[in-house]
Image (cartoon, rainbow, N blue to C red):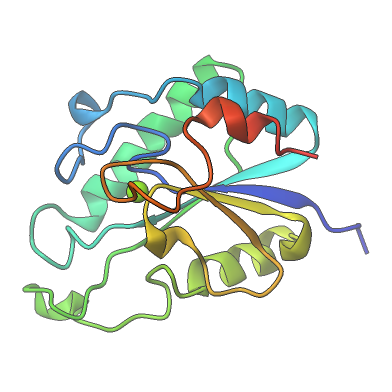
Length: 174
Ligand SMILES: [Mg+2]
Protein backbone atom coordinates (compact mmCIF):
# COMPACT_ATOMS: atom_id res chain seq x y z
CA UNK A 1 0.00 0.00 0.00
CA UNK A 2 1.13 3.52 -0.78
CA UNK A 3 2.44 5.48 2.21
CA UNK A 4 -0.06 7.99 3.51
CA UNK A 5 0.16 11.64 2.49
CA UNK A 6 -0.09 14.74 4.55
CA UNK A 7 -2.87 17.17 3.73
CA UNK A 8 -3.27 20.88 4.07
CA UNK A 9 -6.97 21.19 4.85
CA UNK A 10 -8.30 24.62 3.98
CA UNK A 11 -11.50 26.22 5.10
CA UNK A 12 -12.87 28.18 2.13
CA UNK A 13 -14.61 31.43 3.13
CA UNK A 14 -12.18 33.54 5.13
CA UNK A 15 -9.13 31.46 4.21
CA UNK A 16 -9.11 30.94 0.44
CA UNK A 17 -11.36 33.92 -0.28
CA UNK A 18 -12.54 36.90 1.69
CA UNK A 19 -15.62 36.02 3.71
CA UNK A 20 -18.30 38.29 2.31
CA UNK A 21 -21.84 37.33 3.24
CA UNK A 22 -22.53 33.85 1.81
CA UNK A 23 -20.37 34.02 -1.33
CA UNK A 24 -21.53 31.59 -3.99
CA UNK A 25 -20.67 33.05 -7.41
CA UNK A 26 -17.29 33.75 -9.03
CA UNK A 27 -17.98 37.49 -8.89
CA UNK A 28 -18.22 37.21 -5.08
CA UNK A 29 -14.74 35.76 -4.80
CA UNK A 30 -11.72 37.80 -3.87
CA UNK A 31 -8.76 35.53 -3.13
CA UNK A 32 -7.00 36.22 0.14
CA UNK A 33 -3.44 37.57 0.17
CA UNK A 34 -0.91 34.76 0.38
CA UNK A 35 -3.24 31.87 -0.41
CA UNK A 36 -1.55 30.86 -3.66
CA UNK A 37 1.94 31.06 -2.14
CA UNK A 38 0.84 28.97 0.82
CA UNK A 39 -0.67 26.33 -1.44
CA UNK A 40 2.35 26.22 -3.75
CA UNK A 41 4.67 25.77 -0.80
CA UNK A 42 2.48 23.03 0.68
CA UNK A 43 2.36 21.09 -2.58
CA UNK A 44 6.15 21.39 -2.93
CA UNK A 45 6.47 19.80 0.50
CA UNK A 46 4.19 16.93 -0.42
CA UNK A 47 0.90 18.04 1.08
CA UNK A 48 -2.35 17.37 -0.74
CA UNK A 49 -4.67 20.37 -0.81
CA UNK A 50 -8.17 19.64 0.41
CA UNK A 51 -10.91 22.22 0.87
CA UNK A 52 -13.42 21.56 3.66
CA UNK A 53 -16.23 24.09 3.86
CA UNK A 54 -19.49 24.45 5.79
CA UNK A 55 -22.09 25.73 3.35
CA UNK A 56 -25.18 26.17 5.47
CA UNK A 57 -26.42 28.69 2.91
CA UNK A 58 -27.79 25.66 1.07
CA UNK A 59 -29.88 24.63 4.09
CA UNK A 60 -30.96 28.25 4.51
CA UNK A 61 -32.12 28.56 0.90
CA UNK A 62 -29.60 31.23 -0.08
CA UNK A 63 -28.12 29.15 -2.91
CA UNK A 64 -28.10 25.56 -4.11
CA UNK A 65 -25.69 22.65 -4.05
CA UNK A 66 -25.32 23.14 -7.80
CA UNK A 67 -24.10 26.70 -7.11
CA UNK A 68 -21.55 25.36 -4.62
CA UNK A 69 -20.27 22.74 -7.03
CA UNK A 70 -20.08 25.19 -9.94
CA UNK A 71 -18.12 27.63 -7.79
CA UNK A 72 -15.68 24.87 -6.86
CA UNK A 73 -15.17 23.96 -10.53
CA UNK A 74 -14.39 27.62 -11.21
CA UNK A 75 -12.12 27.86 -8.18
CA UNK A 76 -10.20 24.73 -9.15
CA UNK A 77 -9.55 26.36 -12.54
CA UNK A 78 -8.27 29.57 -10.94
CA UNK A 79 -5.84 27.51 -8.86
CA UNK A 80 -4.82 25.60 -11.99
CA UNK A 81 -4.08 28.99 -13.62
CA UNK A 82 -1.61 29.45 -10.75
CA UNK A 83 -0.17 25.96 -11.41
CA UNK A 84 -1.72 24.61 -8.22
CA UNK A 85 -3.69 21.37 -8.15
CA UNK A 86 -6.43 21.06 -5.54
CA UNK A 87 -6.94 17.40 -4.68
CA UNK A 88 -10.55 17.69 -3.53
CA UNK A 89 -13.37 19.90 -2.30
CA UNK A 90 -15.75 18.78 0.44
CA UNK A 91 -18.71 20.83 1.59
CA UNK A 92 -21.45 20.38 4.17
CA UNK A 93 -24.81 21.78 2.99
CA UNK A 94 -26.71 20.88 6.15
CA UNK A 95 -27.80 22.92 9.15
CA UNK A 96 -30.01 21.97 12.05
CA UNK A 97 -31.87 25.29 11.77
CA UNK A 98 -32.19 25.22 8.00
CA UNK A 99 -35.30 26.21 6.08
CA UNK A 100 -34.98 23.81 3.13
CA UNK A 101 -36.42 20.51 4.40
CA UNK A 102 -33.97 18.23 2.59
CA UNK A 103 -31.04 19.93 4.33
CA UNK A 104 -32.31 20.27 7.89
CA UNK A 105 -29.96 18.00 9.75
CA UNK A 106 -27.50 18.11 12.62
CA UNK A 107 -24.81 16.61 10.42
CA UNK A 108 -21.57 14.90 11.37
CA UNK A 109 -19.98 16.63 8.37
CA UNK A 110 -20.53 20.12 9.76
CA UNK A 111 -17.32 21.45 11.27
CA UNK A 112 -16.12 21.26 14.02
CA UNK A 113 -17.34 17.71 13.62
CA UNK A 114 -14.83 15.58 11.79
CA UNK A 115 -16.98 13.99 9.05
CA UNK A 116 -15.54 15.77 6.00
CA UNK A 117 -11.95 15.25 7.11
CA UNK A 118 -12.46 11.60 7.95
CA UNK A 119 -14.03 11.04 4.55
CA UNK A 120 -11.16 12.87 2.84
CA UNK A 121 -8.60 10.85 4.80
CA UNK A 122 -10.25 7.64 3.66
CA UNK A 123 -10.65 8.67 0.03
CA UNK A 124 -7.23 10.25 -0.40
CA UNK A 125 -5.03 8.15 1.91
CA UNK A 126 -4.25 10.98 4.33
CA UNK A 127 -2.38 10.73 7.62
CA UNK A 128 -4.41 13.14 9.76
CA UNK A 129 -1.82 13.23 12.54
CA UNK A 130 0.71 14.76 10.14
CA UNK A 131 -1.76 17.10 8.48
CA UNK A 132 -2.71 20.71 9.07
CA UNK A 133 -6.12 22.43 9.07
CA UNK A 134 -6.35 26.18 8.48
CA UNK A 135 -9.51 28.09 9.37
CA UNK A 136 -10.85 31.46 10.43
CA UNK A 137 -13.49 30.43 12.99
CA UNK A 138 -13.38 28.41 16.17
CA UNK A 139 -15.53 25.83 14.39
CA UNK A 140 -12.45 25.13 12.26
CA UNK A 141 -10.84 23.55 15.30
CA UNK A 142 -11.83 20.09 14.16
CA UNK A 143 -12.67 17.44 16.73
CA UNK A 144 -9.91 15.02 15.74
CA UNK A 145 -7.16 14.05 18.19
CA UNK A 146 -3.70 14.71 16.82
CA UNK A 147 -4.78 16.99 13.97
CA UNK A 148 -3.07 20.36 14.15
CA UNK A 149 -5.52 23.21 13.56
CA UNK A 150 -4.40 26.78 12.90
CA UNK A 151 -6.87 29.62 13.25
CA UNK A 152 -6.33 32.94 11.51
CA UNK A 153 -7.15 36.20 13.15
CA UNK A 154 -10.51 37.23 11.71
CA UNK A 155 -13.65 39.16 12.48
CA UNK A 156 -14.89 35.97 14.17
CA UNK A 157 -11.75 35.25 16.18
CA UNK A 158 -10.24 38.38 17.70
CA UNK A 159 -8.66 36.60 20.63
CA UNK A 160 -7.01 33.24 20.95
CA UNK A 161 -6.13 33.00 17.25
CA UNK A 162 -2.93 31.24 16.18
CA UNK A 163 -1.66 33.39 13.31
CA UNK A 164 -2.26 36.84 11.86
CA UNK A 165 -1.83 35.92 8.21
CA UNK A 166 -1.47 33.07 5.74
CA UNK A 167 2.23 33.93 5.40
CA UNK A 168 2.74 32.69 8.94
CA UNK A 169 1.18 29.35 8.06
CA UNK A 170 3.89 28.80 5.44
CA UNK A 171 6.43 28.59 8.26
CA UNK A 172 4.41 25.86 9.96
CA UNK A 173 4.66 23.48 7.03
CA UNK A 174 7.13 20.76 7.80
MG1 LIG B 1 -14.41 30.39 7.23
